[in-house]
Length: 97
Figure 1 (cartoon, helix red, strand yellow):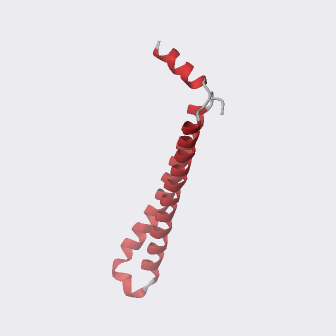
Figure 2: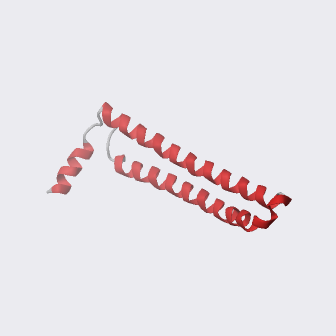
Figure 3: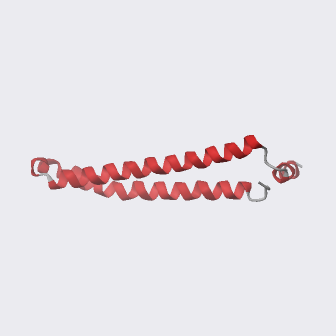
């Protein structure tokens, strides 16, 4: 019964408010990815700077740790971006736009 009601709701045409909500969600997804990318750049560049500066040689282990974490942040950001995009497409696939 509930599945039938959901399928009926999903086949109706989207209202303007629903279309705008989808666009806001897409933009939020992009902003989240950019935040992950920005964090990746900061970790990566900070790691390089700590390793290369002789005055910071005592804490070079932190630089190596930052260089190890940076690609993980990028991977997580890319994975979340595409997963959210795929989920949005699957949810609204059967709905006419």
